[in-house]
Image (cartoon, rainbow, N blue to C red; front, side):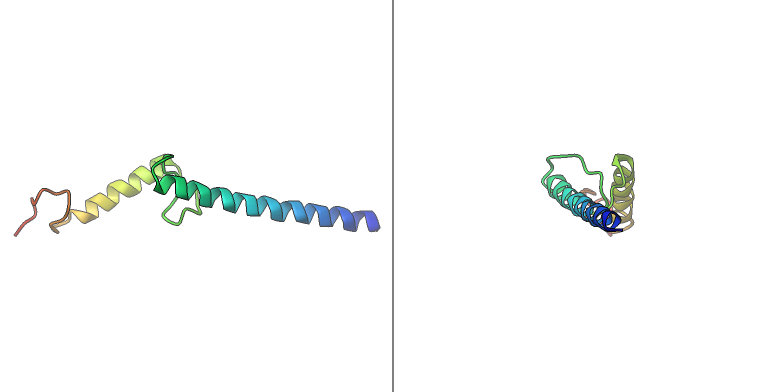
Length: 81
């Protein structure tokens, strides 16, 4: 039927527009996170929302790995050999 085809086309159009808008919102959010304007809630790609708690856990584990026997910025030289 003609009505079903038009309806399906319109529905398809709105689904694509919604998907594009979501992608743009994630990219804008990543830019704002990188600039420190908003709290970080996405993974490193900026394309997946993981939440504040997951971001805190990632930062904590990254710091732990950086201090494992390697002298680096922020460890005050505690790991010098």
